[in-house]
Length: 309
Image 1 (cartoon, rainbow, N blue to C red):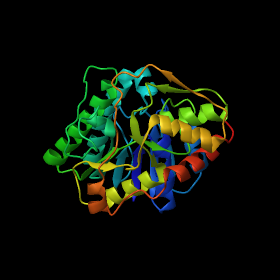
Image 2 (cartoon, rainbow, N blue to C red; image 1 turned 60 degrees about the vertical axis):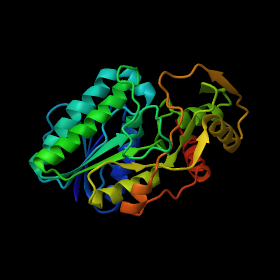
Image 3 (spheres, rainbow, N blue to C red; image 1 turned 180 degrees about the vertical axis):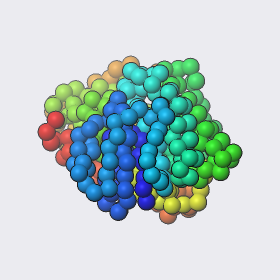
């Protein structure tokens, strides 16, 4: 296939670029590098079938030749990033999704939207199933990301119903692995970065909030299966093994053999108290479930973080 990946120099996007090339597909990586990192795709430059375009997808997207698939992954994804770039986060979720879907219609390409577990907000249902509509504060500081993704899902389904575009929607739960930015601001890169420097690990709140974390190679495998499946409504992808933020901090301190201490700060506004996917739909329709345990994935990620900055 000839595949265009928006946000392809980001954490997940770059792993998708590499995976698709390794599976014999041609990849066009598009990224404006607002939060993406050119180092993530530097090893791919010069590989047969790989093209990098430095471009903002909130503008009209022009690509020569046919496209078989568009994977729309462009967006700031960490609270630190979308709090710093709130308007650009909303623009890429709205204008960017509109432009990418318009290109899919023009090229008669299939389309996959990277959505998020944040569409569920601070959930009142646990674990979260795809038929849960969520509990989102639309005017809160996190609403710029939550509502951008909810709008993107609605836009994707509208194009599917009105224009007949063959679409997919993946709701991505907390994912981690190599190529996360050290200043990403999310839990795992924060904890690993601080632990390796023997600095205090700051937890926002009392540490009782829960998360379930999925290693990036498992996520990419699930996305590839979803691309080939005949399902148009959202599908959760994530790990069902849930732990508290406090236990995650303790685990990372242990795995890094760090001298770090744990300190507590004020909770973040609208931070979800529980987060765990129901992946029955992915198991049933895709034959997918995660294979990498948190311990194994964290060791791989810590090894990467130990490398050069």
